[in-house]
Amino acid sequence: LISHTCGSMAGLRALQMVALRPAPEPRGVPDPQPGPGEVVVKVGAAGACHSDLHVLYELDVSAVWQLPMTLGHETAGWVHALGSGVTGLAEGDPVAVYGAWGCSVCVRCAVGAENYCERPSPVSGGGLGADGGMADYLLVPHQRHLVPLPDGLDPSTAAPLTDAGLTPYHAIRRSWAKLTPDATIVVIGVGGLGHIGVQIARATTAAQVIAVDLKDDALDLARAVGAHHTVRSDSDASQSIRDLTGGRGADVVIDFVGATPTMELARSAARVMGDVTIVGIGGGQIPLSFFSQPYEVIIATTYWGSRPELGELLALAATRQIRTERSLYSLDDGVAAYRDLRDGQVTGRAVVVP
Ligand code: NAD
Ligand code: 9ON
Ligand code: ZN
Image (cartoon, rainbow, N blue to C red):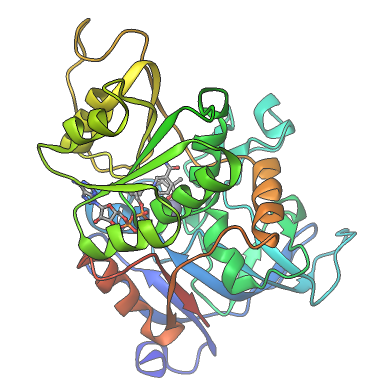
């Protein structure tokens, strides 16, 4: 297919978003060369995130991103080539790519929270404006975006941790103080993010974990990775969560869907003084009034996580307490990864391995 689409101009492969709405296409791309301070990573694996579907089919990014653009914002691999001035890394080092590329200078970036860069650019990372990791090689614009993998973690295990792991890690970590041993956390949506979220809740807190989804295989996966209870996402779900919490409701609810019904569920299932964190970008909207949620419930959205948090999560994963359920696809079959994700056929994470 690649030789059909691009003839002889290039030998390297990439899965690119070519335009709004159509499926991504495998295309040939030039060999990336690292400029000063840059690093080329040989891609070991790149995860397919549901956000890519929002980008491909729902959000209009054509005014701010130059297309075609290689997809993939969840990547790990090995250092392949170093630009001049890069120190402390060597060819062959296994690395995770921290995907939120900020300005590096503002106060948030200075502490590693480039996900909350205060001088944000429309190009927020590889696969999110710049060429991403669904390719043989990824050009990383600065070595600070690379986190060396701890012993025992290979790139295909690590890739999903950079987003499907890091995003729930950050969302759960910010609510740790409320996740006492007598507390309950509800995870809504047990897909790529949610199934790792369940495990992060189990590994970093002693709280009861309740997982909610529409699909049987997602609920089965939730139990397999440690959820104490599963609840089907329907009109009885809020009452079921109250029943499982002695009538109190959940101390922390994390919504990995972000559709109107899940946002309604999240706030109605919360305990007085609980946290409701909306992570999913499902386009939902809920009206806010004085009585629309229990008193002192804090509702927040979160975006990805910080670079130090990625280091913490990789250290946790190296202890074998986090398992990533993966369906592997070759790069030539990357279109199928997104098709299956769109069709709800993926359990856990679809991961492309070049
Ligand atoms: P996914 O497709 O792998 O998983 C979504 C899961 O939600 C599936 O198991 C699906 O069955 C379930 N679901 C769908 N509708 C539901 C409902 N009404 N009730 C209960 N469960 C329902 O998606 P993902 O890659 O895990 O991403 C989840 C969401 O998080 C997406 O919207 C994605 O764009 C977003 N996201 C946000 C951030 C962030 O930083 N805020 C980062 C990554 C992904
Ligand atoms: O990692 C993701 O999936 C988020 C942070 C990307 C959101 C987007 O669509 O820009
Ligand atoms: Zn993502």
